[in-house]
Image (cartoon, rainbow, N blue to C red; front, top):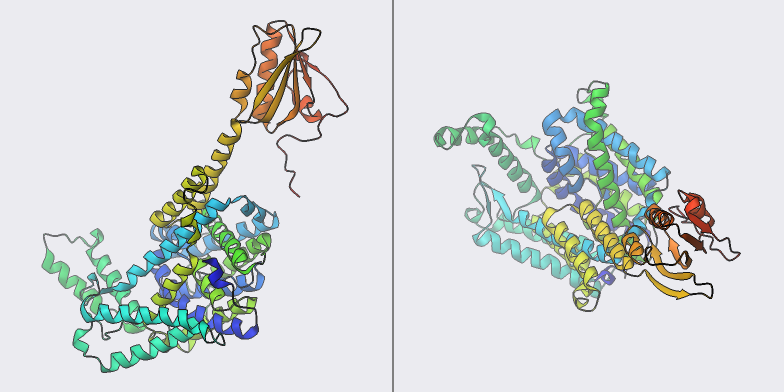
Amino acid sequence: MLNFFRAQQRNLRNDVLSGLTVALALVPEAVAFAFVAGVSPIIGLYSAFFIGLVASIVGGRPGMISGATGAMAVVVVSLVAIHGIEYLFPAVMLCGIIQVLVGTARLGKLIRMVPHPVMLGFVNGLAIVIGMAQIGSFKFADSTGTVAFLNGPALWIMLALVALTMAIIWMLPKFTRAVPASLVAILVVSGIAAAGNAWLDPNIAPDGNPNVVLTVGDMLMNNARAEAASEVVGPAEGFDDANPEAQAEAVTAAIAAIAEDTVGLKAGLPKPFFLEYALPPLTWETLRIIAPFAFILAAVGLIESLMTMTLIDEITDTRGRGNRECIGQGTANITCGLFGGMGGCAMIGQSLINVNSGGRGRLSGVTAAVCLLAFMLFLSQWIEMIPIAALVGVMFMVVIGTFEWASLRMFGKMPARDMLIMVVVAGYTAIMHDLATAVIIGVILSALAFAWQHAKHIGVDVKFDEHGAKHYQLHGPLFFASAQTFKQLFDPKNDPDDVVIDFYYTRVYDQSGLEAINALGEKYAALGKRLHLTHLSPECRTLLRNAENFVLTNLSDDPQYHVATDRLA
């Protein structure tokens, strides 16, 4: 299904229009992630602007969209809750510094170590996560702050508008590609929703909502109501089930106190955080508090960004620059933290919307960021009128385009270990919503499977020469997983006084292999027998702990390889 995104070509018009489409889709997610992090929606929107703008200009993957993400939000929520929001911004800046250092050290190439089954599990799990995230859009908070699913006419109207959005995105490219289908769908469905809210019977609207068709503005108010109710019901207020009337009155009062201008999208130009918030003390204790969060944020942000870069590379048949992307993400987070943002990284869903809409260049990301800021400054009331159904329909089409349907046909045709890895990565991603950890688990499982498979490949051919010496001709790799099997290939007690081990068809890959050779030499030496080693690399001979236990034969055709060194170009 990744071919679904390949038809568009890069041009300025596509970049600008796709950037506008992405900006519309960024609004609800930035707001939602801000609530996850326990900060103001405006902070989430500022974060999406700075991360998106700087990463698009400095980063290594044109066409990729960055912004405030859920993966970063779930990390900072405990920092904000425990230590206060003033510690958030220095932590984000330190995260950016770490990411810049990673890029400067050229460690971005490590993303090449992600195996294909992990990539398949990642994109499939991601598609499931994006789809599951849309379920929350079918909920609303009534006038008492109670969250429930839509029902009755409001539900059916929303489902119809979601289906219409998907139909427009699917059908319009068959007739014209002059404008992004996602943008057309959002505009058409927004017009229908505005007419519907004006003419439909308001009595069928969800309780406490002025509109039958829920909009972005309704979502903001619903989130504010639910947040106010949860704060009152929480144990800090001292309420319990024994006093429901007092609790209900407190909830009603808290919701009534919500000012509509505090939950909208309108905001002024961003300022450095130290002009808006108190600075934390500049001490080692502050560094001790923020450093663990900063390292986790840096790791999560880079893994998700580099995985997104790899996916966009595959979709567009181009190649991004991983090290530059690390530097770009770091620079973006430093800027974001300086201006009071919650940090962020690449956004896979929005990147796929951008690619699907024809965005291929850096201008698409810049346009998305600038349009998002313009929405906050001048067009917030119009953006709040966009129906949630239109955005849900766009994301559902992203789900269809993201899921690698061909992987379902691979079951039974690919190795069982690869299928297991793919399912584990997809399952962990879908259940835990933690993309970075899912990739790490997949890489570890792949490495273990590789080690286990190659550990069984070591073997030996035995023969005796005319002098009665026993020759062991080894085959296969000698490393930590095969070291124990290597030791079991020999019979020191029953072997003759002279034993020859030929490493011509064997390579020693790590210190565990060297230690296995050392241990074998000690056994033969203890029995008064001579162990001859041939075709062993010069480095291996140098690293043998006690050369007196061996007779090292130096042949002209000895291999020229190294142990435990980085030979990557």
